Every structure is written in C-alpha cells, then in structure tokens.
Length: 387
Image 1 (cartoon, rainbow, N blue to C red):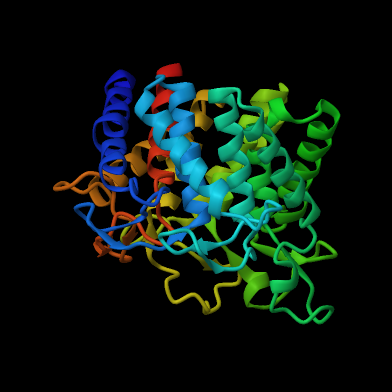
Image 2 (cartoon, rainbow, N blue to C red; image 1 turned 60 degrees about the horizontal axis):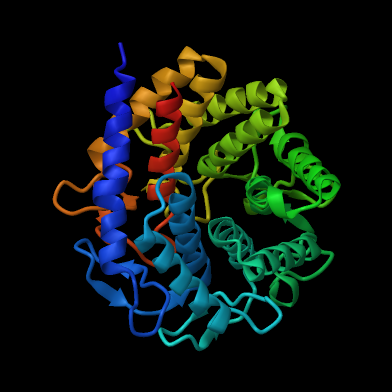
C-alpha cells in the first residue's frame, strides 16, 4: 500500500529544503541582475551567459511559488529583480525576446526562438498575479500576441529551411500553448481564450497524435500528413507525455472528462513505448519506424523527460483512478530517486547515459535551469496532497 502522505512530504521537502535553496544561493546575479544558470554540481558558476528562456522560467518559478505555496518575500524579490533585468535587456523594445545575452545584458543571439516569448509571457503573467502591476499584464499580453502572430512560421526570418520544398510543422508550439493559455487565462478575453484552447487541443490530439500509430509525432507536413524523413519519423516521448498532463489540466478546467481520459491513455502508451526494457528509464528520442536517428544523444536519459512522466502518471491516477498510472508512477519514482537525485549536493543531475550513470554532473546550463525539477516537485507534491 502506497503511503501518499510520506511521498507528499518527500517531494515537498526536496523542493523547499534542497532544490530551491540551491537556486536561491547560487543563481542570483546581485551585480548585473538576472540569474546564472550554468552551475556546476556544487553550484559554482562556470559560464555567465544568460539565456532568455531560462531567465523567464526562473521568474515564473519564483512567482509561482510565491502565488501558490507561500508569500515569501525572498522569492518575490528574486523574481522582480529577474523581471527588471529582462525588461531592460531581454528584448528589442517591441517585446521580441532575444535568445541569449552576455552577463551584463548585451544581446548575443537574435530573437529567433519563439520559446523565449512563450516563457516571457507566463513569467510576466505570474508576476502580475503576484503584484497586480499592470505593466506585467501588458508585457504578458503583448508577448502572447506576438507568439500567435508567429505561429505559422515560428523562426520567421531566421528559419534555415528553403520555403516550399518540404514544409513541416512541429509539435512543440501547440503543446506549449496548451499550458500558456491556461497560465494567462485571467488576462485573455474568454472568447479568445476558448478559441485558442480549441485550436491547441485540435493540433495536439487530432494532428500530431496519430491513431494509426497510437503515438504523438514531433513533425507532420503542413497538410497534416505523416512525412517519411528524419524529422517526420521523429518521436520525443517526453514531449508527448508532458503535453498530456497539460491536456489533463485543460480537461479539469473545462469540465471535459473525455479529454482527461484520452490524455491519460496516450500518456500511458507513450511511457510504455519509450521505456528502455534493458536499463530502465525513458529514451530521449526514437524513430517511429525503428530507423537510425540523427540525434546521437537519442538513448540518453534526461531529467525533464522523467519528471514530466512522474507528473502525468500521478495526475492520471488522481483524475481517473487508473491503477496502471499508479504502477508507472511507482516505477518512475524509484528510477528518478535512484539515478537523478544527487546524494552529495542539492538539485538533480540532468543527463544520464543509457545505463543510468551521470553523463554530465552540472546542475544547470544552456537548457537546464530552475524549472523542470522544482515545477515537477511542486506538481507531484500538490497532486499527492489532493489524494
């Protein structure tokens, strides 16, 4: 019999006593503003470049904790100083958000990455909830509008693809928009919000989820059909699983149990399909036809993939009572706490070999910041609490 209270205490303690103190102690740049994200195992800064989507994610995380857990002034103060840095340096004056900056805030990489925008939108949306400052609401709304304007061509002028030869669209944007729409619910007109949610759900569940495969693909043609090329065959189980708990949340919010049921079944299929039968853990990338992959890191075990699976399985169990979800949660819990949790220092390893050994001991970098681990701990803790 699972002791849900003990698990709840475990995830809460890991979040509040180990993971967040790590970021509060090591990541805040008190001289130039913003956050360091390139942190070694013990928290030592090894690079000072600042990546906008990680800056925004950390502002969001801090503001979310302030709004949903406890009104700790240190969390709000850290979020606000990050927001000031972003408003001063992170965009071109029209809320086109750069990808990366120097430590001081000089642009390094143009605003080609639309996910800088999506995370800026939710960061300032949470700050508005925390402070009531209308400036943050304006930034969130205007940034979200830019995301929607770029939806059909996310990279815009920075796309390397030759137009018309093999037009593809990718799963990552409609996936994240499911979450962004809920995050910004209070800032959007109800009719506009409903239209956006319906479109995102259509894309996720009727375009990228393929019933003939019973899997979610990463790319389809712009006509919605499967394409037989590297990109068209690519599967990312972590993306698919993460999107399904977004859909579960939407199903709960909209009072649509059929969405919850469908998302739960897809999440179960994805975790079963992606699970490594030899060493355990979920593969990073797969090919839907079993062909060789371009991504040489395809068999690595990544932190965020497993954390998103934990969230999806415990939510699926809570919302549907699925014993299959609960069994998978137990298996994932055992794997994660054995392989990703660092017994010596706080925060979790991000990158494991296929065998489950740490490949890189860093705690943060260009892609890993104060986001997936604390968000996952918060989601699992609060879902267990509801149980």
